[in-house]
Image (cartoon, rainbow, N blue to C red; front, side):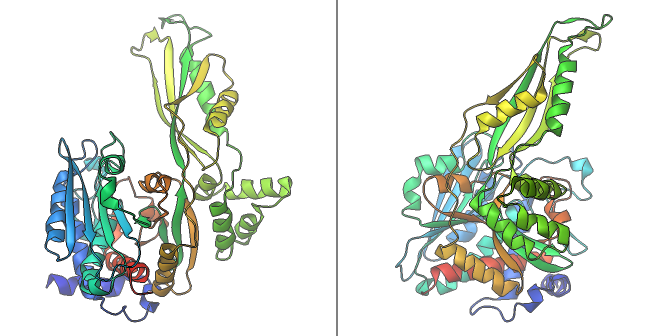
Length: 474
């Protein structure tokens, strides 16, 4: 009865573009993909891996049990203690001729404010064609869809020319280096000579029920923390002081919040907006997208100002500086001598974060407030090229699944584990394989995170087609 209901939901809820995809690829069972992806996603959501503390070992064991049942799959549980672990499984090719490909995702999820959810966040709930639960799209749903794809790809193992390495990591959402960094430092040999990797980070964007674009992440912004510290005299609250540290901090914060970093285009974002202009419905916005790379500074500035009207566009054009914490004072009748403000600063690869911090200091305009980078500046990894076998396979799969959609390279504004692989020379691409409206995409890390039930099967097929394309006979 449950499978019948799932298939009914699938038929009713599929995006129009998915219904244009034609027959399933040889050897792929769409009904089974839908059932497997839904069951695996529900199973993972039930496991509490909210970070902190993470506790990813329970999810590792859940996935490892299913992978161990497959012939020709090596499973490695990489325990790091305190209930935390990574999982690495290798589906061995029957006709190995080319280097392995990695498919990966993370098992930890961000915390929840349970009272703000309409359903219990750790109880997977299907409602109105959506599956609700923490991790539905970040990143348990994609990990489940990837495993569902591997369960079917396993039947074609004899013809595969590449091993497929399934990697599920801990601690992607922050905390100690027990995830991808630990895998690379302690277990690099298990990855062997892997050539390419597929991770989270891209988007399949719906507009009016149709897949409008498939954005393949080829690079990502770098994460930094910048802290502003204001200092001044302390005193009794009954005697206001003109050089109040918190007042100076408030003025600096307001100015930096209004300030914008300069434009910084890279190859990925140039190509992204060139292609996006071709499907942009607003003529003025399409014009701005075409002109953002103009050699004329006035034309470029006008384009930048127009595109800044859409925060999602503005965020990929330059460093983003988001105020995330304000702290100061300890009693209502005491003027404190110090206060702090913290910004989450995301820089475009190639930007000088020290220059950004200096510009924030200048924009703040308060001698009593000092801006400093917390920790060391990271070295950006190279952009992943759009000429590799994996990019081409993902592009072909997207065009088969959503005829008429535009496929384009994409810079993610969020940080992912893919950066660590790019840094060691493995071109890595990101895709959140589920067709989503922007409103649902923005639920990531928010309340009532959800995924369309039908999108689970759609995403499974996208990954299957991609792996078949990159691992199957040339």
